[in-house]
Length: 321
Image 1 (cartoon, helix red, strand yellow):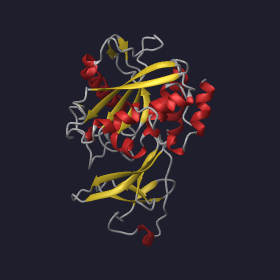
Image 2: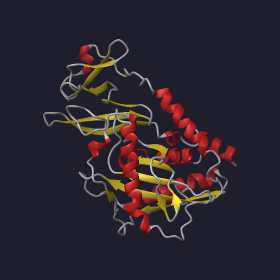
Image 3: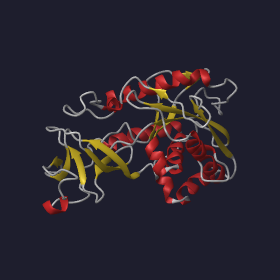
Image 4: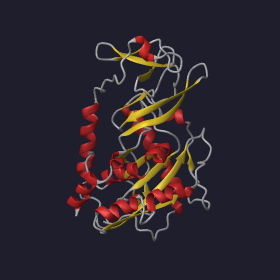
């Protein structure tokens, strides 16, 4: 059955590979208060900012401004040309320039090692009860879209949903039901609100984001603390009768966190990914949180069911295809 699921994953429509996101709309604030509209593309290992014509955009750390980038000695360096003001085609800039980060393959290897440990951990038959937790930051208002938008992405039967995808490719041997917390108020989303603003979870910049994270250790600590606090907040709402450990290994089968806002280019944390909560011992009804999917609300609205299925596929132990 697992072979069939793997084949099915290859054959499903291209949207299933949506964890590699393209043209995710961004609104960035320049130091003078100007709003820059651009796009982000990439995956959880490497993502970047660009304009509609794929000219790369980076932040000039000396001025804090977002500018077009050029390649110099195998590095991206800022130019004096500002998106929205200058036309990059007039200045001999090349679209699509990029440099892979030095630790890219190290991060991929670390990720694959985690997946190897997950292999065969979660049963791919029977019923998996997936927990969905909504999160917003201290500087954000409540989710505005209806709860049904997300609930349908997860649970709609006989239509395009994560439930339907795994039901079909497993030859009707796997059902994934998703339960959302904090419990919605009818069709109104209720979310856990963190004590930190969104910038706290973006990359550090001495000019434009002095509160950002400065290395991978700090990034992991901030992400895991955020998720631990959200889990502890909603844990009393999860009924003890809900089986969240279908293979009885003491670990919750999967938790999906939906973070309000857009994926962030040039930032690893605020991008859809699958990981494990290894920094803390966090429990719901005596079962430990381990594998989780990290999703951004704007990415789900643009990429939909595909990105949900992609990250859930990792939680079932599959590699990045």
